[in-house]
Image (cartoon, rainbow, N blue to C red; front, side, top):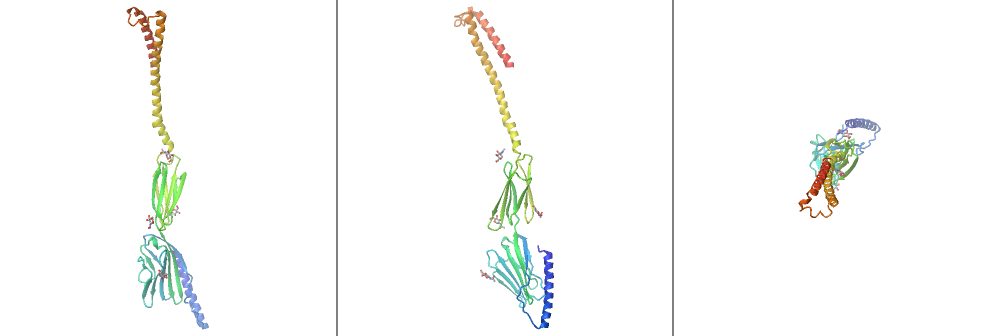
Length: 323
Ligand SMILES: *[C@@H]1O[C@H](CO)[C@@H](O)[C@H](O)[C@H]1NC(C)=O
Ligand SMILES: *[C@@H]1O[C@H](CO)[C@@H](O)[C@H](O)[C@H]1NC(C)=O
Ligand SMILES: *[C@@H]1O[C@H](CO)[C@@H](O)[C@H](O)[C@H]1NC(C)=O
Ligand SMILES: *[C@@H]1O[C@H](CO)[C@@H](O)[C@H](O)[C@H]1NC(C)=O
């Protein structure tokens, strides 16, 4: 995670400093004026460091060519008293003040290695870390601003027929969500948790029925992830199926029903015609026969006429039926 060129720069700087100091002290010797600048801090090196949670991190102290009298780590974390770890070279003593987190330790024996180790890194390790090396030539400082990264948990699901929801749960920092193809109507919401993580949710819908599969891309410093999901068929298609499966049968029913109705009605009309036609014929032929004809064999001829008329009507009806 450390930038190599920065370390190289630091090395160069240190070499330069030591060289200049050697030169200045020799001139001082000549002038017999000794300036005590031990306590003057040398230019500080500030480093931003991002570490993924649950991994191990090593924070390095500046390299010095001069003898180190004291190595000190100052650790300032949120909501915690600042913790100090110190090692004195002359007495080979280590000391700790206010340090309660046993995941933060010396990387190895401080007599050999002044570096600090965090194993494993937790979300609470966000903060400032400073290594101070006290030497006869002054203090060498190195400051770290440590940012703990938490990979979000990505999920993708359908909320409605053509609406998908992509979630990046509890990431740190907030993840970026993008869609392929772009949604017609997208809403992105962020939810901040007390532990510094953020849940990002993007809800999109697609109106174009050609879009059948959509991809959600979750971009995060800890790595990118792509998820895809199939949408239900577009509304246009479902309208088609609606027409096919609901409207069409109803139309067919209506048509068939109408035909039957017409048929039935036609028959009734035929019968009515017959009923109306009979008395007229009878009236013309026999004015008072209508109530006696049924019982009187004398009126067979009239009946025959009626029968033939009925037959004629029947023929008309069946003619209509067959149409
Ligand atoms: C230890 O913690 C107290 C607060 O609890 C703080 O005032 C003090 O400065 C801390 N000591 C060091 C050496 O960090
Ligand atoms: C699809 O969702 C939209 C919006 O909620 C709704 O108006 C429409 O009726 C839904 N269509 C189907 C077929 O479910
Ligand atoms: C942070 O808080 C959220 C909500 O309580 C939780 O889901 C998540 O696991 C937490 N993350 C860490 C790293 O503690
Ligand atoms: C993740 O995606 C972003 C853009 O979305 C890109 O800039 C970055 O390089 C990607 N990172 C990795 C590790 O692929």
